[in-house]
Amino acid sequence: MSENLDKSNVNEAGKSKSNDSEQGLEDAVEGADEALQKAIKSDSTSPQRVQRPHSSPPRFVTVEELLETARGVTNMALAHEIVVNGDFQIKPVELPENSLKKRVKDIVHKVFWDCLSAQLSEDPPAYDHAIKLVGEIKETLLSFLLPGHTRLRNQITEVLDLDLIKQEAENGALDISKLAEFIIGMMGTLCAPARDEEVKKLKDIKEIVPLFREIFSVLDLMKVDMANFAISSIRPHLMQQSVEYERKKFQEILERQPNSLDFVTQWLEEASEDLMTQKYKHALPVGGAAAGSEDMPRLSPVAVQNYAYLKLLKWDHLQRPFPETVLMDQSRFHELQLQLEQLTILGAVLLVTFSMAAPGISSQADFAEKLKMIVKILLTDMHLPSFHLKDVLTTIGEKVCLEVSSCLSLCGSSPFTTDKETVLKGQIQAVASPDDPIRRIMESRILTFLETYLASGHQKPLPTIPGGLSPVQRELEEVAIKFARLVNYNKMVFCPYYDAILSKILIRS
Image (cartoon, rainbow, N blue to C red; front, side, top):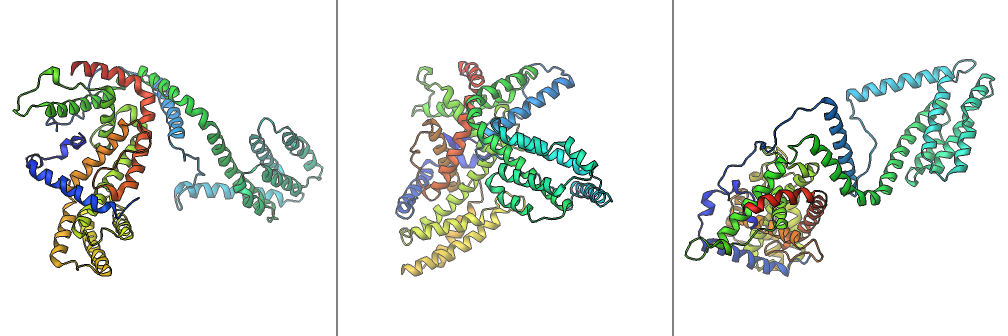
């Protein structure tokens, strides 16, 4: 089923290959995988539609409506990121070196601290700027407190009483060093353990201006820590409410922009058409006549949705708009797509290598893992614009042949002949073509595995890895879990919309 996900990439020459040839390739893959089990245990012809379908008449919106919609999208995206990404954290802003923003920031800060230094150097010292800074520090410390921190709140309020501090300054009785000592002690009480070292270093700074500068620097880090603590605290509660929250926010957007499900409708229609075409082909009797309509298997909404999500792993992100309901996860689906493309190449290279070298190295598990790591490293930059797959596969072919020859020599097996090296290098270079039979089989089986995993309801253990994919089993299972998590959450949020659209699509099929 999954072979036809990207029909625009399958040419007619590939379709015209004989069944015997294709079956021979399948048998070769199965045979090679059996040898590896000991070694490693760990077309639709219609053009793609890229225009926005006009299912609803366009309407004009006000600037206020657009701004309100943008705010809704921002809030929904943030909540979605917190829920979907378990590693989500706020990080301190670091401006690039030599950037205009950083230069401006450095100049402004230097002017500010120079002004503070000049005031404190007067005779008698002027504390206007210093008192303002103490007020900011006081508010920051109070913001770190929880409702139950009554004693700490009273301490901060009492010691950092700005009115009292101003009176002391006017009477020449202000001990700024004593205030700084209290502030550092309170920071040590409130900071996360990871900041203990930074707070400790503050005690070694004796000059007031550098000390205040570093105090604010550490406080900024503590603000980030507090924000991340808040995120981790609300994540379980947000998980419970995020489905309803995102659905509500999307509904608000849909009410302002009635066309916001057009690309989703197109996406589900194409998935339904592709599946129906495949089922129709499978339902043809031996004689070639069309089967009766009563014999045609009907499509289920779940099957169409699963197939639609698989299509996202073969998406043309430059030419085709992404469906609206999965737009917030487009970068994640794209990343998974790139990972699967790399796994396809990696799996194909390992398959042809072990097929050629077996049985001499079929029992060398360490060698199999080493070879996989070498090829994976060489494919690391596969999706960079400067990467040329054909050239890299030539390098991989040379390296693989050297490693295979070395392994066979150490094992005392028959040497890897020049003719075999030439054939292996040619087969590895052929993987560069999307129409390479081995590459197509690997891609089809990867998608079939993901399809089976979705259909299984994501229950453990994972489905059996198809033949030929054993060398990349660990990597494939990791991708499958990430993919299923995205799909499952998206289904929970947008299932009512999908069901409504599919009820109209499937009733016509």
